[in-house]
Amino acid sequence: MNKTYIDIKNVHKSFQKNEVFGSIQLSLNKGEILSLVGPSGTGKSTFLRCLAGLDQFSSGDVLIEGKTILSKKTKDRPIGMVFQQPLLFPHLTILENVTYGLRLHKKKKEADIVGMKYMKFVGLEGYTQMYPHSLSGGQQQRVALIRALIVKPKLLLLDEPFSSLDPDLRRELRDGVRQLLKKEGMTAIFVTHDREEAMLLGDRVAVLANGSLQQIGNPQDVYEHPYNQTVAHFFSDAL
Ligand code: ADP
Ligand code: MG
Image (cartoon, rainbow, N blue to C red; front, side, top):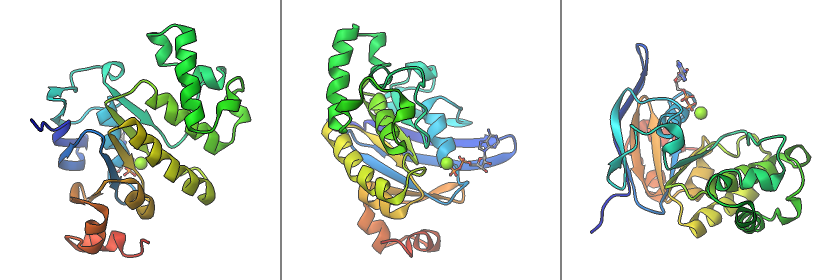
């Protein structure tokens, strides 16, 4: 049995009369990282927001392990999201931030043990009792990432999580994030407008432009054999 883990079927989104994207069809295997790239304004964030339940697709369906999730409320969807800004709770300590989702189901002591483990994974074990404002942007983004991962969502959405960081930090985080997602066996959609980042992080790359998916394939294939001018142009000065 080789059932598709995540099945995004013909989703479409319009704001009033403005169509953002037509029919997007996409499947992900369990543990797969898909990089989603495309020019600014093509609807990448809108696509993720609709998956997460922060907005609604105009039509189409999304199945996780064969069951639709679109009828579920945002909080009941097995989906996590990391945004461009870390959006940590300023009045909670780092450990409280990390364990926030776990605390809904676990006792504090138990949640703290798991939280510490994740903080170690990202090299922040010394920061448990600090508050977000005393951490750097890169450190805060690592906290946002493990806060999302710790509840083990079936799908993790990352919307340009590194774009507010400086280039050195981006490189450092990029490698760490792929390692961490793989270690956790996480299935993820990683949105970026950085082509190099997309190719290094994703098992496959999907290119969204002009309202539809132009191409989806392994990074090297997309780079070496672009289907059309739009994709070729997008990758022409990468790497
Ligand atoms: P990307 O993340 O690829 O840069 P977005 O998803 O942010 O693109 O935006 C895609 C398009 O949808 C843009 O033209 C944007 O103006 C439009 N859009 C996004 N959110 C809304 C909204 N709430 N109402 C109307 N139009 C919107
Ligand atoms: Mg965006």
